[in-house]
Picture 1 (cartoon, rainbow, N blue to C red):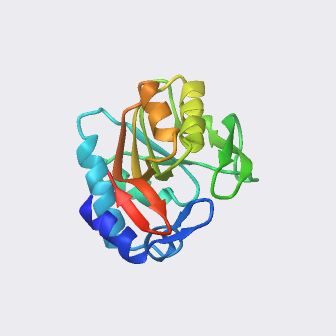
Picture 2: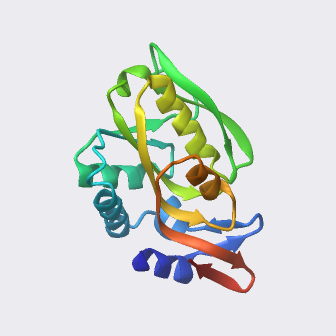
Length: 189
């Protein structure tokens, strides 16, 4: 998606790790027009997939997931990174490793929000090593529901997460795929 690539080039900052900081429009401050366009594009790509729910993980994926949910007219569920006092009853839960924060989270979703007959689209802001998506897939599997694919804003194509998940048969639609990211700049696929 050209508009997203342009914003990454003009405002993205490459940090050690390599981490791409897109805080000015996606992760800290959100450009609502851009995010709605991202959601509309994810909706267009998955319009024929029979999506009944969108699942993301808190917190940066929520805005994109909401925009995709609006485009597809389906509910959005987000996995919480901590079981809080307002999470009650039966839950699906799994461990997820965060590449950006280099920490593990036990993510939870109340079981009432994903049912066996759901066709779930996973949505997230980044795909790097694939651990967040693997965790979301595990939650959907626990529910006995079906994952129909994943809509990703930015994929780090130089890391192995996307390739490994595609090899397992997951349909992944990334709106911007970065092939190279270093002190010389960013190159898209």
